[in-house]
Length: 322
Ligand SMILES: Nc1ncnc2c1ncn2[C@@H]1O[C@H](COP(=O)(O)OP(=O)(O)OP(=O)(O)O)[C@@H](O)[C@H]1O
Ligand SMILES: [Mg+2]
Image 1: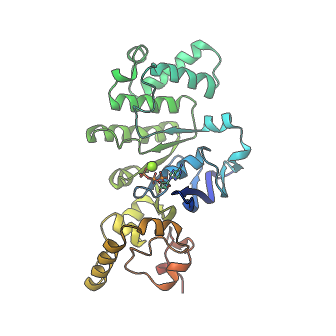
Image 2 (image 1 turned 45 degrees about the horizontal axis):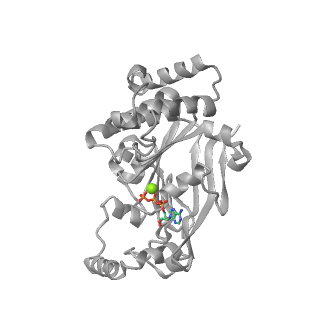
């Protein structure tokens, strides 16, 4: 029996961009482990850092060029698709895009119950749906005849959560699940995730820009930057005591570098901002090198390994054991 629910091992995904088809690594040598106990594992990082691409690799929507992903110790490409998707379910960002406006959401719930959860008996299908809807705070009778436009954004996201729960998965991948909801509704959905974790023992990969909700709900966190995981560890520890210069900037607690260095860094950032993104994706070394106030020569040439500092893993030469 594996002690890991999910293990992502040195995974790389290459895309091409531009008319010349330059290759870049949208996900670059990423390793993460989700232990086999209920937990919320957050992946945070700025736009374009590779969070959704990583989620799609885990969901088997993309296949990695390098590395492998293990679920309960088995390579996910050796697991039958139906079996895998019964165990791992997605919840996406836009609740309105999750449902076809021309079809009643109940139809998706039924299809999920029949095709993914594999329930054959029609009475059981309706029972599983009713029970799951009530668990997420919706009423079967209110849902059954409605079209998507007759629900609020928050209700549609609850329907998406119900759909994900119907197969009784082990892991839910929620990609920016609350970013399109009003602030007042977000906390209810976040609390529902915590409740699902605690009552049903389901783990989450929670993808977000929002470090406040990450701090509130997650057990572990991985900070991504330009395709690499730069820091990984206990969420509260990482967010209250960030080690990587990027994480420090991300949570705006950058310890004061010397004013001269800071000015140099800001000027450099502004000067290079037009093509810096491309450079960051293709550089062989640390991708943060163009923005980092602590850069040394080595950073440009070699991507640092995961270096353990207490229980946190950080990919930064500053922490190299001498
Ligand atoms: N199918 C694709 N083909 C080519 N490039 C892609 C493809 N999907 C994503 N990319 C590029 O890969 C990089 C990572 O994208 P990704 O969507 O994973 O980022 P993200 O962290 O989810 O961003 P956001 O926070 O905006 O959702 C971006 O530069 C994006 O433009
Ligand atoms: Mg994304």
